Image (cartoon, rainbow, N blue to C red; front, side, top):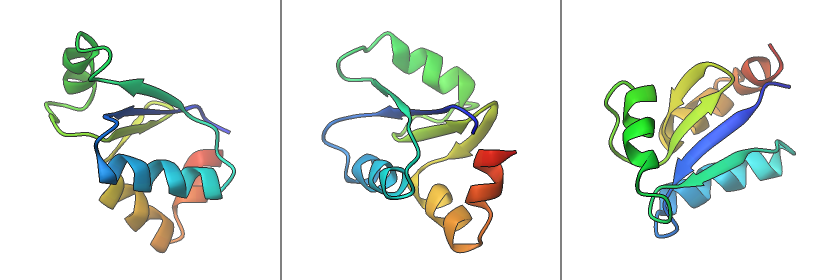
Length: 85
């Protein structure tokens, strides 16, 4: 399974929804809290091609986007393949 990394904020409902989906699927992930580590926000924006909002989700080298995009992949039946590829 590819590594999953999520840039989050503790006050973000979309972050919680994305983490909940991954947890329900049994997917482990690393989390970067951009409020606790504000210096990492610039790193997130660079990796996310300018994306400023959280969550920003990465599966391996693939930038998925946010919670809406993650859930769309799941609904389309494409998330498992992306995680395993």
